Length: 401
Image (cartoon, rainbow, N blue to C red; front, side, top):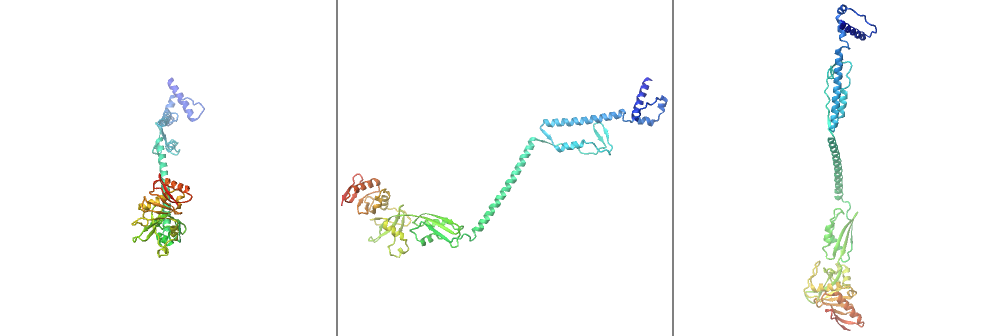
């Protein structure tokens, strides 16, 4: 009975607490308790202080703790493996753990789940490694660089196409028409000869004219050693010519044998042209400078019959070349005093000075030694010398006047 009384006392105290009353409820007899309405006992059993309610709360708290512990373990595992959780997944996980609305009836069940909660798919966690992030950044930089390169290439191609179109329009237009032709460095060619050689087409422009072809035509004449054709905008074509100099006049016997034909030859042994007789029909179309050179240039005479000369060709006659080499090889004032050379043969080559002294020079060998001996003999004989022989430079001979 004592056990029953203690149990009844505990029941009375719980009842007073639930009803919020501070007064002590008087004890009732066993018969009264048994006769109490069943509804009262059932409501007391469903009170929030019943063992069943406490067990439900405990299970719900245990489930929540288990969920939090599982998430903490996942976070530690992710940090150890070098992977990071996407911010979107974290925010979705936070929203999933938020309290549910009050107007919906929710009942707690063991395991931390809610009955009656709206069904939602659990958020999918996405993990990305550091290496993947770096590769993605590199790929993005490459795409950006490719776009920039493509843009620059398009701009360059557009500019080039525009320039080519503009150049084609100007090239085919009559702009920069040639109105003046300026020729420099010409003294032995006439204006008509230069015009024929250049042969500039009518209506040509500085852009369409072929300067290389003009230069090539100008070199066809023996007088031109070098030529340069320049465009001087807006309307002038400039031709700069370097002419060959006349070194000697060669008197070549004609077929009749009684007359000679004078040929001008350059210092590089190129036949320049035959010189027409003064007053002849050919002299009218010949530059006056050629006749001036004929008077002042060295004359080579006594050339054997049959010597061949051709305009623009190099001289191959040994007698003529030997005489030219002697004069061009002299280094003193004696060279300027030589006015005529008899070139009957290499060994018989004779120089004639401006004062009439004859010098048997011979072959074009030991030119400086022979020149030194000749000057010494002339110096030692102030009264005059008529003849000097230096064919053998070690044994020179001379004859006074």
